[in-house]
Image (cartoon, rainbow, N blue to C red; front, top):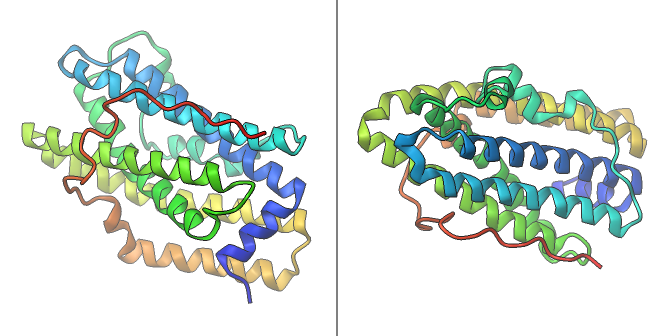
Length: 262
């Protein structure tokens, strides 16, 4: 029998699977850093107060990318090419979730609807990130090699999620409630499909690297599909609710620097 802990331990213990895992994570965080930086630069005048927080969000994502790069360097590993089918951010964009990169490359101010779309997209994807990092913290928060990185990233993801709740509630009070709920629901439906597909692709690559038996790979794929089934029926609701967070103004200060991993 296998568990989340045993699976992740297998991935961490093998240089090739660890390299792929860190490369996928670093690539996604770097994309998030770029996106947030562009959104901050293009913020409309009516919402300029958000720009420093979006900048901080992007700086955190960049930091996470550097952390995963540092974890690879510590083992003497170089980044692997990220398979297209494991690129969560790109696949979400193809499903129309969030702001298209073409929009962000233009030097034209965003609209208020664009910013609401960004925040709703972030609320959904940061829920996923926070859930994943909470699980990793539970099982590997004290791991001598990756524990420090996991704890730092988990703390940041909780801040990002709290920030999304706080700002979306502020915009809902300003009269955008129905629009926010519509976009949240659209994002959540697309995200759970994307997460299923990316999870299947990642586990397929890991299975080939680690030479998992066919039965083990099939059982993992069945588990991923079962999670998707639950999320399609009811689990998606955790991604669309809004509540005032205990952490108030969580992105109100400067980003912390990435630690050294000697």
